Length: 90
Ligand SMILES: [Zn+2]
Image (cartoon, rainbow, N blue to C red; front, side):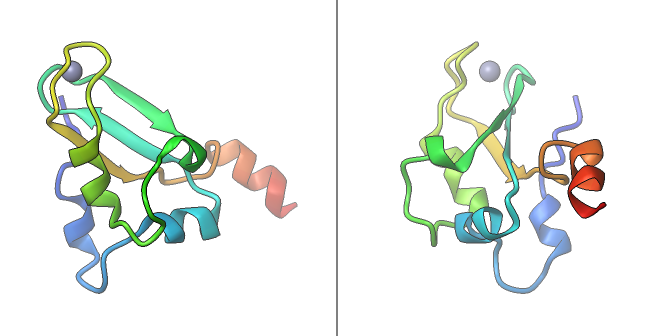
């Protein structure tokens, strides 16, 4: 199951933080490295400081399916999906 682990390495500059996601109105994509469960999370449900790097968020999360704490977190590529993004820019 591809989980896009290491996505953040594409951006070799400063790490993407929760504040960046909030500013860009993006979702947080969570993926369990043990069972492959994925889900989107809105930043409102993440009780962490806005300066927290996105890749660090997973360390504070637990998979709701298998209970594993090996959760990868990356920024969702499009806010609400590609169609929603097109609507917004029209
Ligand atoms: Zn899991």
